[in-house]
Length: 87
Image (cartoon, rainbow, N blue to C red):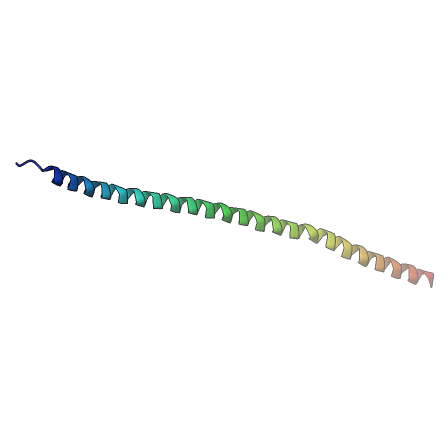
């Protein structure tokens, strides 16, 4: 079997290096995609928490409104009862 010349060895090394560079580029792209996905996932979780908190805040005002309406109705009924008893 004949030995490879230095030029052939260099050509083989160039092919191997280009293959490795391509693989490293692919791995780098995959890592960047994973980082982007992680950032998007984190932002989505923050958005979900914000929506849940907004919902809780909206429901927190309902008892105040119900109490106000109930108090107004009771006041009206009390005024009507006093007006009826004064006659």
